Image (cartoon, rainbow, N blue to C red):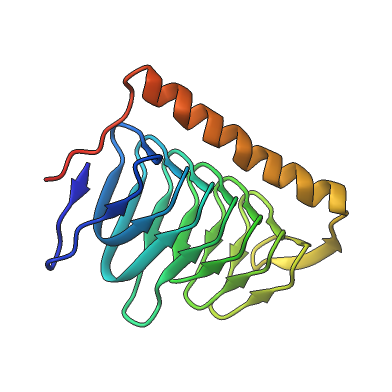
Length: 176
């Protein structure tokens, strides 16, 4: 469901897939071939949320902003199930593992991988192509080009999934 808030409506490209039970509120922009899955909340009430081309935000994820801390997700990013993205930047091709939390001002570099359950604290910058894990997240190793490419393949898989779900009539783009 799409909701107007403070005179802002979510802007959704026609190729985007939004699953039933997802709630998109306020100042949000979804670019081409993005997908937002079941029981996900994107709340752009205090600043902007932008999800880049080909990225997916999976089931149960919460994306929220504080004033001065927008959320920007680059192209071909996979945001796993039950992630919290709060006032952060996730660059192109990154993968955010299930249950991870990324806090205000954090930057996840291009092609980086945040392990499941990791906590990236406020203001932390993760270098491009780096695997991080733990609470708080610490650098584990530099990823191989093959690992980084595999993350992009996951994003492409979700583009296809969104298209199939839309063909089955399992989508919503209603404005409340």
